[in-house]
Image 1 (cartoon, one colour):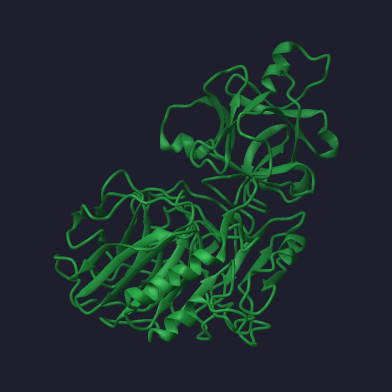
Image 2 (cartoon, rainbow, N blue to C red):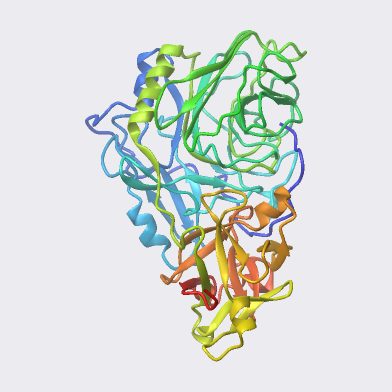
Length: 514
């Protein structure tokens, strides 16, 4: 889909990764099937997987290879992340060790189907991404922690500017050929930017006209199509149209749906397609549309090109937000019965939220720097200006109050946090042009995004680090006593790698003003 609303430019300098595909899938053999995976179910139904991507678990009972690769910024070293056992869950412990004390991104999401349809850093197309050479950003490796089957795992957290792609695929449907696809998303993480997609797209990263895409879309954009309520909706991105049913624009049968873990399905064959969805933690699928192709010229027959995208539109539109955990694409149009069995497999996998790192909502805290020079300094404000200030027991009551914060559920996403000033009710820490300020909440979506931070374990092992919700490759960092959202090794002075771990780690302390 074409771009709807450009994000402010980010500056993370990531190198191009599109040629990483060959020879990276080490340990990719198979063994005796430990269980039945979604792709085994699809194969039994006569519609085998031709692409299978997951950062959380094996999608075949016999799969025992790598799920994804992480790359750390400190030395550009990479590590493939595999499974605890064949057909089982991700083994995330090596990632935690490998990425300790530095910043890691997910550089490759491996295809488990054996066809080599791996996803890597999306190249520029109709629109350019914010990384070096016009490429898109890569997702932070630790931004979306969850549990699956009782084991720690990480999703693919897409903020505007992030995207993955494969323009040279094997076996993906083309033209009017039939196909199916499902994805598991975080149903609470979305926006109205174009376009958080997973599925079939153009092979030149450009808008090649109506019907050249067939991908799952998730979000609450209303520029092309929408359903009941305020969204978000599962829709089909068919290029130059997000469709919620047979009509352009509104279709009453496509409901707003926002399960924390969401199963989203789109499938299509000659002059027939369907949208289905459900709760990935329990229950069955519902069908939101099942019928002929849209009553708009250019979509019958379809002209699919067979690339695979994640987190972006077909022309590399990069304004979207969302989180991906697993998804597949099939050869052939799966039956509802097959998909119902896949849904049962998904609900049995045991997706669950992880305990959040950091302070509880409603608590009153102060945030102390951990850099050796500055361990008596706290995040504080003076009017709208934010900074780190020395605060001690002998400090004035005003200085103590300025360094005290009320933890609120994230204004943009309740899984994260926002910090309201203790002595300026209704005003929050927020970033603007990468610098931190204290501003009154104006109720806008932009403010909510700018004022939301996602806590992770402190980069230097102390306290917490706070990743920007809408610029997920940036952490809250102090530099020369000022506060920024900084990108490790980026182009700004405050992105310097020296003292990165210490400057971006914060100890949560008792409040200076209870």
